[in-house]
Image (tube, rainbow, N blue to C red; front, top):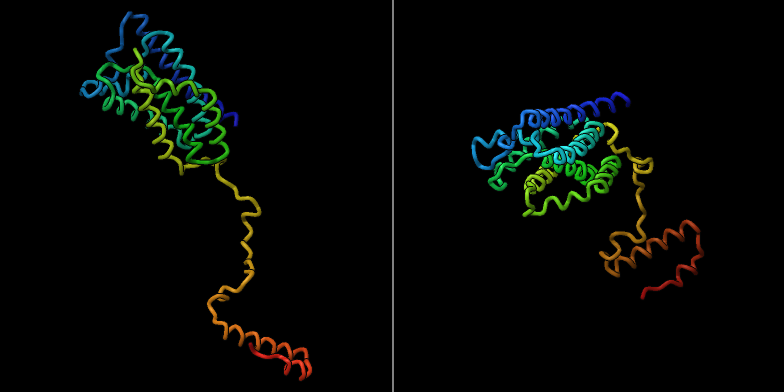
Length: 245
């Protein structure tokens, strides 16, 4: 358990360190790395699929993405270690690709699209996997990041709302794609009563009750009465007293 915690935190820490390292280079050199962002539907803009999540406009922008990147990455690599690396790469690449295809023709920078993808991935795992662990994580993410829903609304000045929206949609897709690859502690265990074979139930009435004619039912009743007389050795006067309707 301790190793698992350390490994998940180590991955998250390195990702945040990379973000800060790139930003410090930009600040120290007085450069503007905005040109490395994703620019939709231009071949040269494809480079932004890889580089744009590493670029941030200012320190506030960097901090606002660093905290959720650290927390969400740690969460995914701890609770979904089996698919974490593949899921992370899919969210990272597919979000950038979707922005390049569908977003406005401006430079899109920042890791917020990836953040929305990670939030969506964790939340929808609770829907698709239905394990107790995934449901609890979905509820926690809902409480902590409920304010993020406003970020997908269009026409927000200076904000790449398309990255937020498309990242969220990619997160849903990735959660669905990996929904069958459950972790060892997610495997559902049936309760003891579920493991017991179902007992055959005795119907209140025979299934063919309404399929027989009145004459057939009368004949069966007489046959049953005859057998009962033989078994109980009823006197002759009892059988002679019966009559048909």
